Structures are given as C-alpha cells and as structure tokens.
Image 1 (spheres, one colour):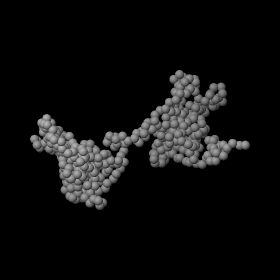
Image 2: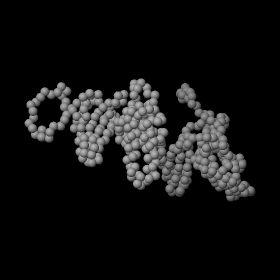
Image 3: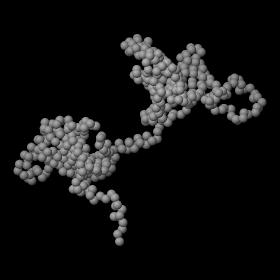
Image 4: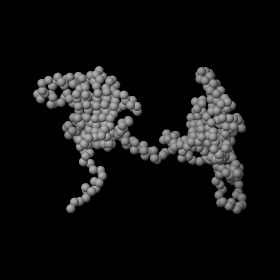
Length: 459
C-alpha cells in the first residue's frame, strides 16, 4: 500500500483482465510520488483495520500535515461504523530532535484553552498548582488543545470510577474531588500553569502571536540525560565511552608479585578510590595464600600539594572513632595527652578509621621487640601498660584527647562529619613548608624550569 494514497487498488478481478493498450508514461517516470505536507492536493489515505472495541472492520485514515512554525506530523484517525468507537492519534513524521523541549504555558483566560497542542507519547504533562502529572508513555500522542488535554485527563480518571466505588470507596471519593478541581480549571477562574516536557523535542504548544513573542509561553531547549536517551531508545557514543572509562576506574586491577614474608608468588590488588571532599587515592592490598600474610598500603593519586596540612581533632565522643582517615607516608601523628608522637613513614600509608589507626599504634608500641624481654629496661613494661590503658580509654570515648595529623605533603585526610559545613571539633590548617621539610620530601633538588640546559653535553 502506498503511504500517499496516490495509487488506488482496483477490483479483485482486474488482475485477470487483459492489459489495456500501452499509454504514454508520466513525465516523472514513477508510479509513486513522494508525499509532502505542503501539497495542497494531499488526500487522506484510508486503511481497513480492526476495531479494538467490537473487533469488527473499521477504517483508519492517515494524513501527513504540517503545523505552522513547527514541523510535519502524521495524523491517524479511526472510526467504526458498527459500534461508533473512534480514536485519534498523532506521530512525529520527523526524527527525534537533538535536544529535548519544555513548554511552560501560563493559562490566564479562555482563549488560552483553545491553543493547539501536539503531545507525543514521550512527553510528560504537569499542572503544578494541582500537583498533577501525566507520566511519559502512559498516553498515546495527540493533536488537541489545552482544554482537550484536561478533558482527556478527566475521562481517564472517570473511566475506572465505578469499579473503585465498589472496591475502594475512599480512593474513589478523593478522585471525584480531584476531577472537580480539573473541571474548574476549564473555566479558568484563576491562572494556572501547564508544563509539557518532551525529551524527544517533538511536542508543540501553539503561539497565537507567531512570529511575535508570546509572553505567556516559555520554551526551553535542553540536553537529554543518559536515562532519557535510553528511554527513547537512543545510544549515544560519547556517554558509552565515558561509561567504559568509568568501569575501568571502578575495576580492581591485579598484578603478580612476591610475598614480603615467605617470598612465595602472591597477587596484589590495586584500586582507585575517590574520597569525598578530598582527592583520589590508590589502595593496594597483598594477600599470600601460602603463609597467610596480609598487607595494605595507600598512596596518594595526586601530586604534592603547594601547602602542608595540619589537622587537629578534639576527640569528645565515641562516634569520632568511626571517622574515615587517610594517613599518607609523609604524615606524622601526635597525641599530646599521652606525650606520644609517631614520625613520618612509620606504619606507612593507611586508609582506615580513627579507631583502626589507634589500634595499629597500640599494637606497634606494645609489641615492639626492643621494649620486651631482656632488652627492656626496669619500669618500661609498666609505662607501656599504662600507655595501652589510656589509649583504650580514648578509643572507648571515656577520655577526651587531641589527635593531630601533620602532613607536609598535604595528602592526608580526616573525615568531616558535618561536610560540607565546618566541623566544630576539627581544625584544618594549611602552612608553608620549611626548607627542612622540603628537603625530606626531595623537593629542594627538583628542577622544573630550565632543566634542559643541564642535559647539554659538556666539552
């Protein structure tokens, strides 16, 4: 069948009749001509189709037309002469647009109710004043008016009311009250807002003042989200590539190494982790299946910061122990109440909680071989036991203390429980590094400008 209806089918017996005398071919040389919405001789194409109400044969009429200042659409109208059922739908005759469109119409009078509206099946309709929404793909596309949209919504709500009144009377009464509000909108007793949001960009609300500006109508074009592209069945190449890169970043990378304890072949897992309100770090974990040795290490994923960082936390509550903590290799730790200081590179880099780090410190101090056995001095065991008890009291939250992290490289982190607001119990200071600190970090010997001169051969 031709979509244009330019060629009509003859009687069924015409195929057996002898062919007529050859006639002069048309000037175009084609039996079918392309249809155009601007063709004044355009006639609807009729198709015999099945009625969805009585399941008898009815007639569907298709017409390609063009809306002024918009684009071409296909109007489909069905009517059944047996039961009288009819239905009208529209479809866009063009492609999905590059951007979505949102029409915001302020309805102030009855003349606004007569504006023509093209609503595709992918469009969402909202009336904010009633907190009313018709989601996308719950209705077929329609060529109607603003009043027709509201009438269609009323008909949809009234359709199942008899069933609701029999089974859920309370819900039916609430829907009846809402239907009354929708009917009041048709009288435009007070202004209201109609929003049609179509990610495909093929919906339309008439501007009766075109080509002049309409003060009551705001048209907004926007870029679709990935979810909207998926809803429309589109596959965007750019976002897919980004997703693949993101999947690689979320993947745990593995490489072979040797166990530092038994030197047996082992495997190290490595993953990039983005710490909220901080930066990206690299977490590395090694597990040996032969001797059971486990180790983990954290390295900063970025460069040395321009300023050093000093973080001071006043531990006042047991919940402070759950704060996430990143201690880089260049960070020293101090607890003034215990007269304790942990130097740089001790314990290595760690990504743990405050409680986890304090337990690692307790294990490091109490199980130091130089402070145990014959090598220990008199009274040293009592001091270690006292230190361990005080540290346990801090972990339990029964004793308040200050926890200080000093990182000249600026790559350490302590979670702010009130982020993005300031934490009243935590103080973060940034400072200029001294010459000695730059020396420890190896920054004094770095030459980032004019280094090519040092590479020239000397004679």
